[in-house]
Image (tube, rainbow, N blue to C red; front, side):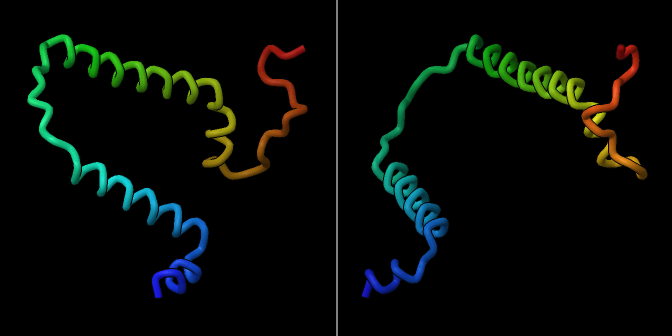
Length: 87
C-alpha cells in the first residue's frame, strides 16, 4: 500500500516529502540547548545582515544594465555593443 503511494509521487515531490520528514524527525528528537547568547552574537548577526545587503548591492551594480533592460521598453542591449567609454 505505501509502495504504491510512493510510486505515484514524482521525484521532486518525493524529495520534498523526504526532506520534510527528516526535518520533523530531527525536531522531534532534539532537546533544549539551554545556551547563553552573549552580546557578540548579535554583533555577528548584524555584520552578516549588512554584508549580505552590501553583496546584493554590488551584484546589482555589476548587472545594472541588464536589470534596467528588463524594465525598459525597446530593444534589449546586445553583448556586442560597447558601453560608455568603450573603445
